[in-house]
Length: 119
Image 1 (cartoon, rainbow, N blue to C red):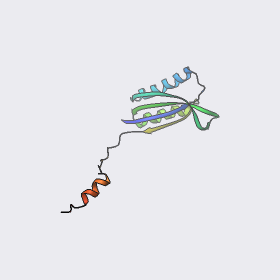
Image 2: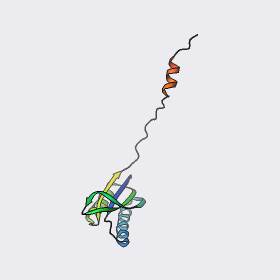
Image 3: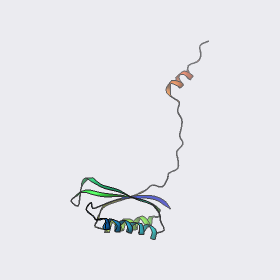
Image 4: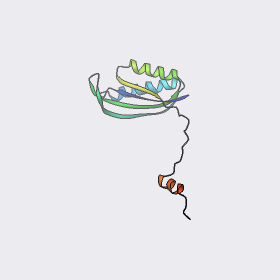
C-alpha cells in the first residue's frame, strides 16, 4: 500500500451536518477499499487565491491515508460528483529511499590542512 494525502476544499457556508456527512463518506470510502485511515484535519475557512464558483473563501480539509490506486480513483470520483466540494488534490507521499548525506568540512579547516607546516 502506498501513502497518500488529499486536500479538499468545501463551500464555506456549509453547516456542521453537511460537513459531517461529507467527511463520513470520505472515511467510508477509505474503509471500503481496505485503506488505512490515519487522520482527517479541519484546517478551517481560508481566503482562496481566486474565487471558485463565486466563493472567495473555502473550508480546507486534510486527509492522510494508505491505500491503492483504486481507492484514490474512487475517492476522487466521489469528490468530483459532490457539488459542495470546490477543489481536491491527491498526492502520493510514499517514502523515497534516503539519500546519502556527505559531510563537508568548513572551508577554514580545509585550507589549514592543505598548507604544509614550515619547519
